[in-house]
Image (cartoon, rainbow, N blue to C red; front, side, top):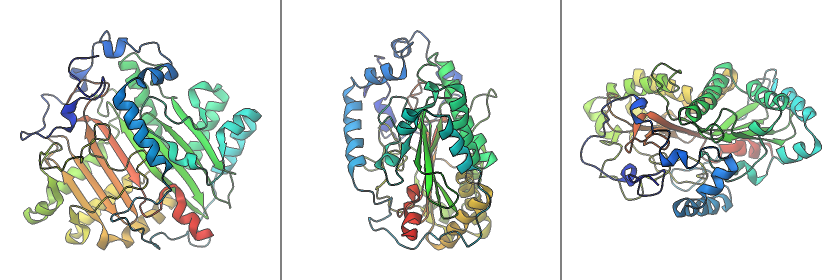
Length: 428
């Protein structure tokens, strides 16, 4: 165990402790925060398979308590994320008649199924209403084992799984998903733990029967990437969605996966007038001691919409979008559009139309300095979207405080929109 960590080997109390001073690092380079490869944290698990690593992690009391808590959330009946505990009806609209174009995803999924043995098909396939939708998680250790683990499959099957994902997403969205997977592999190389973290250490499942007319979907999840894709009546949903990276800013070695989104957010935050800032900036830093107890979680830190948070009540905070001028609204909309990037362009326009319809009930909140000099958190929230970006402390790097090179982002569709459930209800 490393002596600097006092929650467990991977999580220090510093990440949840309020501090009056600004949260700053001497450098924006993650290289200065790499552990020595012979550090006990790394050396103690080197060479383990993902299952051996999972068994090792399960010995930790903090983790066992977290998993018990997650299991309790998983067992709750699905309601959906809300702002006040009450689900708002009628905020999602079905696709207009004739709006759906040709969809290559069902054929790709059928091609995958044709490659599988009966045992593989049984392990990978679930009914459309299966509770396993809600079993995804972000960490490297395994909690639920839904579907097939890509790294354990033949090259043909692995490529067919990637083909289903590619056929379902926009080209730019697929590139982002693959970049997250490749950054996970890059992290595995940096810490010399490729058997625990690589670009195929993900679980994949199919739900329902792939079809151009009937509801179906798929799920992909693993470290720093979790996608839930649903096709319902000509509309696609990709939510819940979790995309992260450590490191996310890789000193020119790999593309900075969230840089464009962060620059838009900083531009919007910097454009706020003093009066607008008074509303929008909820906390002056990501470790503001004014935060109420429990606002920062040792694993989730500030983000509120991660794994097993399907029923979370998240009150609105910050500034209402109706208080923004048109230029600021356009910036906010571009940020929301970037969160929706994985949707095909036609599907993205349908989601943005829902977003636009809720402008008067859309909120933007910010924690931290607005000039990019410090780690920050922001959230866009309305009846049809909850999108957030949070800078985190190190897990595999040794920065004890949040830094801009470790990023988590989440996307939810509140009021029952996750997993396409609100759209499925419209078909009944």
